[in-house]
Length: 480
Image 1: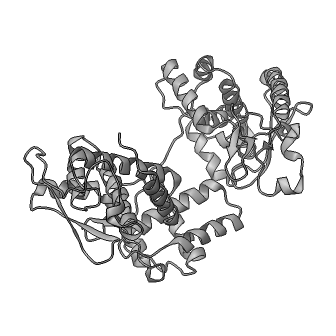
Image 2: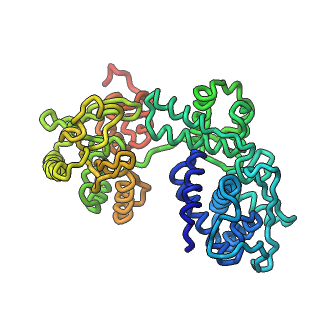
Image 3: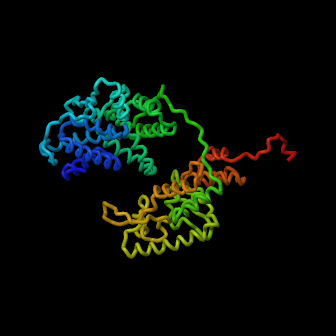
C-alpha cells in the first residue's frame, strides 16, 4: 500500500483540524486518501486530476463497498483536492509515477462516471451521472448523507461557509451548563450532519424550514427510529437557541417518527449466574455491581476508592446521570471479593508511584483545588485501566479507568457462551436489578431512588417486566 507523502499528510491533517473534523473521521479520511493514491499509482492516473475520482468510485463499487463507505471516500478525496488546490502547487505533489493524464479503465465495459467543476470555487463539486437508471440509483443511495431536499447528490461543502465559530460556541455552552462530554459529542455529531444536509449554508441564513426538511428527511428517507429523530430535534433546538440565539419558530408539517413502547429485557437469576461463570476478573466484579447495585455502566467504571464504604455497607455514586449523587446498599455477598480487589489496587498504586506517574485523571478543576489528589489512593479508580495513558499535551503518564468497550465486549462474549435466548447487554443487568426488586414486593418509590430516576414514570416501565400477582376479584378494603 502506497504511503501518503509526509508533507501532504501534514497539510491534510491540518486542513481536517481546521474543518473541525472528528478524530475518528480524520483517521477514515486519511485511509481513503491512501487507497486513492495507491489506486492512481496502480492504474496510472494523476492524483491531482479530478477526472480520476469517478474511476476510483467505480472500483469501490466493484469491490462491493457499501454506499455509505463510497460517500465517505468521495468526501475524503474532495477535501484532498481542496488541499492540493489551495495550499500546494499541483506539480509539486510528488508520487512514484509521472503526472500522466487520466485514461479510461476497462471496468467491465461500463461507462465511467464523469466529474465536472460546478463553480470556480475549489470547494463545490457535483456528480454528473450518465442517463442510466441503475447508476443514478447507486449514486443517490451512496451519497444520501449529502443529499439536498430536491434529491440531487452533492459532494463537498456546498456554499463553503465555515462553522468553526459555531462549533466552538457549542462546546462553550455545553461546558457552562456542566453537561456530560457524551452530550457534547452527540450534539456536535448532529450539528455536522445538519451542516452537510444544508451544504454548509451560512449560519445566519438558517431557518426553521431547514430543520423541518432535515427532520422529515431523517424520518422518511433514512427511516430512523423515534428516539433518534427526537435526539436530532433536541440537538438542533439547543444549537438554534444557545449558539445561533434564534428560535425554531413553529414547526408544522414535520413527519415525526412514531415512538413505540419499549419493554426492557430482563434476565433471571439463573441466567445471570450462567453469564458470570463465563466472565473473568475484573469483568465479573463489574457485572456483579451492575446487577447488585443497579448501576449504569459509566457509573460503575467511574467509581473511585472512596465511593465504597464497607463499614456502613453502602456505595455512593457521584456525578451520575444528570450530575446527581445517590447511595445504594452494597451486596453483602460480594463484600469479601470487593475487599480483595481493593488490596490489589493498593499494590498497583504503589507500583505507579514507584514509576513516578502523574496520577489519575480528575474531573473539572479538582486537580487545581487539591494539588496532590491525583496521586492519593482514595482518588484512584476502583476499576483502573491495564495500561497508563500518555497525555500528549503535557507528555505525562496518567491512569484512566477501564474502558467501557472492553466491558461490553466481555459481556457480549459471555452471553454468547452462555447461549442465552435473550438480547442482553451491560444495561440489561440494571433492568434485572429493578425488576427483581419489584418482584420481591419493593415499592416503586424505593426502586426509583435506588435507580436515580427523576420521574417515577420512568421507573413504572418495570411493571411490564414482572408477572402480576394482583388479586383480580374486586373487594372492599374492609374485607381484607
